[in-house]
Structures are given as structure tokens and as C-alpha cells.
Length: 92
Image: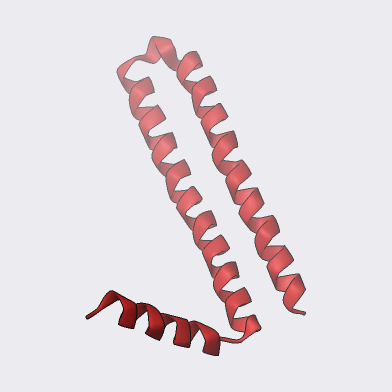
């Protein structure tokens, strides 16, 4: 399929979506960010526990690095939550 035809069809479909539909899509993307962050947190904790199991004497350094990483991930989740709340409130 030709790229220009595909872009024209996509533009036609997007023009038919209502504003509420676009808001719902944006809110769904924010929710997916929160889900991805939860998976990332789980993976970070798993890897930190594996590292502590291999080197118990380095648990303080590993734990502090883990906490800093978890704070950054949680900040992204809070931003996604705030954005999704703003999007939902703007629809009402």
C-alpha cells in the first residue's frame, strides 16, 4: 500500500473521531504509562534483590540506588495520573 494513501486514510479516520474520543485515547495512554511503570518497578526490585543475594555486603549501596530509581519511576506515574485527571476533567 502506498504511504500517501495510508496517510490520507488515517487523516480521514482521525477527523471522524470526536473530542471525547481523543480525550479517552489520551487518558488510556496515561494509564498504560502507569502500568508500564509498575512493571518497571517490579523488574527493578527483582534485580536489586538478585544483586543483594549475590553480594550481601553491598546491600546498603544497592538499596539506596534502588530507592532513587523507584522515586524516579514513581514520579512518572504521578505525572501520568495528574495528566489523566486533567484530561478527564476537561471532558466534563
